[in-house]
Length: 396
Ligand code: FAD
Ligand code: NAD
Image (cartoon, rainbow, N blue to C red; front, top):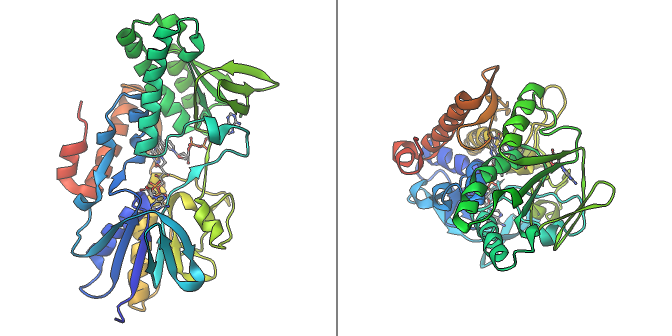
């Protein structure tokens, strides 16, 4: 048929928002839309630090895609993309091939290890439902192991590499969880150590210094040991090497030291910087008018000439613009330039504690924690309306 084919890769923040907008804006038979995702569920990445630490159930961080999209309007394909072929306008899946006229790449980022030896082999990452289940089970297992080998106090040392927002939110949760595990397993809490190791001269580099100081105070009080200005140089099966060769023995290393774009993009012959595509003002790959790139795989520069940090917030806004531009292309109407509207940043520090900047104001403590909850509920509402808010929202 002559109906244009739109293929969306990845049902993350960018992909889901694109799909939801397309299903609303496209008229009957105006385009064939296919959404491809590795799993038949969308995960709420911004909640993953909780199931990773074991303070929440992984079920609460995932939503079936069939509950979000209208399958009479969008074809959902559960499969893993293994190759993108712009020259043939095809995408190769593990179990088939798709042709497209327009492609949207929203596959999310990958952990950036900066070539640090051992990290990809021995460290775990907070990036999917499956990866956080592994972290949660692994941490519990260390307590069980310790009870059989009480001389191995290294089983009770937990290392988090990188004190960006992911690292900070995770140690906030884990410092809530560790005392519970100590009770459950009858372990002396003074034997448990939780390190957050950061190479930069401060935690949360670039963020408001007063709020960073507040966060470090709260977390230190909860038992986190910060090693700031200390780079992880190597990861081994039995710990990490930091700074000038000091070893920290640990059976648990969680790497939150940064993310890069998905390797499939550079493998497709598309130019990237650390895996990310510097998209044009309409969110397309320069020189490839039919390929849009969203979220953690895209690089968008602000007016000061610096790239915006990759967040769910920007990915969602990109999804809206991308859908608009796809519809406009099909109708031969002018495209819209993407303009990021920054609503702020709020990060959790565990139960009842958070820091953030929103509406040009600083927040900390309980108020910030409420704000974080509101942002979470707002997201559920945007993608799934009131029913999803009631099913997955937490109101306590
Ligand atoms: P993602 O949401 O990562 O989704 C990518 C999708 O593609 C996934 O469904 C994945 O399964 C799928 N996929 C990947 N590879 C393949 C493949 N080969 N084939 C098929 N499917 C594939 N940002 C904020 O703005 N606010 C926050 O509070 C916040 N908190 C965060 C907390 C944590 C713990 C973390 C880790 C991140 C947080 N972020 C936050 C950042 C935010 O989650 C990311 O920027 C956002 O998820 C990026 O969205 P995306 O659409 O690019 O991709
Ligand atoms: P990041 O890149 O923001 O932070 C990684 C940190 O690791 C940096 O502080 C870096 O200096 C440090 N690091 C790098 N190499 C190191 C080494 N060898 N040893 C020790 N430390 C090292 O990554 P992230 O925290 O995963 O965040 C990714 C994106 O997601 C960001 O844009 C962030 O804003 C966003 N995010 C937002 C929230 C929120 O808004 N609540 C939460 C999580 C993530």
